[in-house]
Length: 457
Image 1 (cartoon, helix red, strand yellow):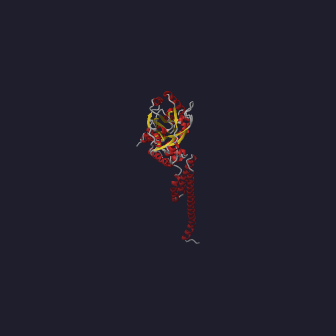
Image 2 (cartoon, one colour):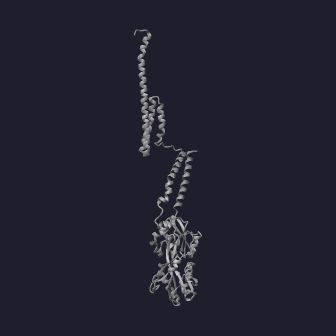
């Protein structure tokens, strides 16, 4: 195979490897996109999630949100259960499954019950045989109504009322309902005041807030609710709504996730949400009410391990996250080095002699020294040693010689040099002995010759 063809093959291979590396990098660096089910679109929950999604995108966060609009928390929970969403905004009293894990509590809302002032309805127990209008997303308040019915042992006809001022006013004016039940975040007090002022003007009726006097007993029996208090004027003033503080129930709205979602991704999302709550409040006032989900074992919704890591300050360290890469990295680099060497051999690039080559030649030199029979042979061996030492010195000057290699090479060179010196001395001694023997022989030759000639001694 010609050199040009070899270079083309290697270039094609390198291009392929580079392309695969770029594709792998893009895949690994691509942000994780999680779908979140929330609704209705005009409600504060959807406004908060939309603002958070924009903040994640604008900040270049490693995790992003894709919003799936729903009719309310009941449908959002169903989307999560069906695997059509990884996150959802749900109510704490919803029929959550084992698949659901809490990420954060978005807000806690008081249960508000209002009735016409002249109907002599002072509490939920007085609604026996009457009609209760339930305002909110579809089926969102079904569990609250069922809990109040069971506790007070009264039969109440619950009817859904669309959450619009016109529909609510019509229901009140036409006496379709005797009271209204709804839940609302505290941050919407001013808006609720304006809405109910519009309802009163349209319906021409005075509305009174009803107390759930046994809220603590209900909460003790049904842990998804808590006893709370609606402060006087919480929904506005002039006139004050309500006129006096009253006891009621409270229900939490959660951001939940599928328990199979990556812990690291949930940790990143949880950290971003809590780090940016204040930045989100101008667009979504509800962000001011966000709080940590309970990490207790008996929590209403078990916390997601990724959220727990953030709350307990046990986030994965860089060593724990990339420890495998640190372990396998040297092995991979070694394989890459071997591959590069194979490519160079394939291209016919001559190998550069490195400093340790003299170590492999030391045994050969020692054997040659032992076999040398003349000083000329030893001179040739010393010349080879001198060339090797010169090469080593040049490599050391270029910084290609490591300290441990230099130490070993020094010992080898010193050993070979001593072997050369001893062999030279041995050869010189043998030569001197041989020369001395020749002189003595020459001195004895004439004497032996005279005797043989019969000359007198």
